[in-house]
Length: 476
Image 1 (spheres, one colour):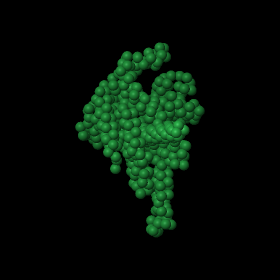
Image 2 (cartoon, rainbow, N blue to C red; image 1 turned 45 degrees about the horizontal axis):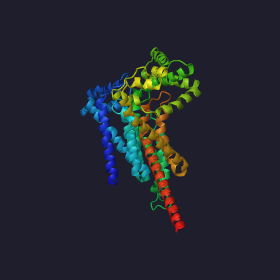
Image 3 (cartoon, one colour; image 1 turned 90 degrees about the vertical axis):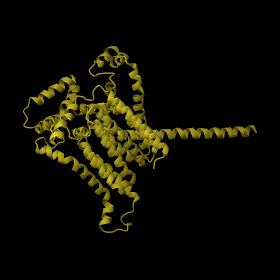
Image 4 (tube, rainbow, N blue to C red; image 1 turned 180 degrees about the vertical axis):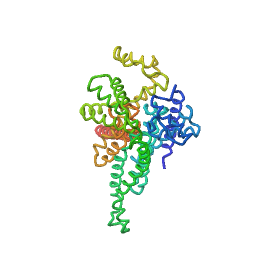
């Protein structure tokens, strides 16, 4: 049971976050972005015909369009209803992040800090109301983290937590295909916890059961891992088989082929010192000019050509890929300011920055609205605080590697996987699926920092007390 103080703080955090998120959604001039049409297009077909139609038939993953159709069915298809639904899902994710952080750390304060870091993150605030798949994907993987934390806390006695986590991960892959290979690191985490926690159980020789049960006890970590992987694939693979039968290829969607004119153009512009947009349009035209027998054939071509480019310039691609990791940690300020109606895209801010400097560029971008800057400043400091506290937690785990290695592994599974896959064409909102675990790192780091300060304060007071006693004795 949670302490009364913890309940009060958690309810305040969740309520404040919901109201803030709802207010941002209602204030936004528009909830649509250029990618939104790909998710909205299939909704009518799902509702009226019970069938999925999107662009070429498989342009986008089905998960988010199905969610949009469901929201329309329950009366949340309008702007206000959608904003409220997204605010609720975002708040629910915050509650799951709290629970996961508490389970991982066995510390309610770490859970509260994690929830706060997640709920009030500027990138999440700016992207939650938008008709994009990033927020639903993040909510799903917040649930994955929570379910997995139950398995971590209780070990193989709660083996179904691991299976449920990977089952939900399969649902996530149908929302954003970047999750389609997550079952591999996910399985590694399941196995690691199973083998780690097994040390606390009786060995097969000591166990009173015999025969099959002894065999199961000895190998159950592997069996749970296998079940978890099968659960993930059972959700994802049927959709891929459906697409293969329809001629789209063995894939979740055909939009993944767009990486050719995104990451490929980014690589070519860096190698040739040309304009990214010009390279992008050239690659789009190259694909459009070819007569492919099916969308699947087109996607396969795009993937092959991108692979050839990477093989031709592996060093340059690696450098671009590493640089993109830095960009992902930057908060998505434009998403938030555009929702507030303070800015609009395509204003030529970069040109002002190059000609007149930072302050002129900021004034141009915010239309002289310095109140907006003051509103954003605490949120930007909040992200900086999250990153600093998270880095502190990672350093503690490295320092105490014998106990911390498992969390370093989790960092790769639940965060770095999502950061490394997008490639050079990374934008700040791609950080969102890594945010739940990053928030846990921040929560764990803050508790370590606060405890360190307390210890120093106590030791300082103790030394002062001892010194004072020595002075008194000398005077006597």
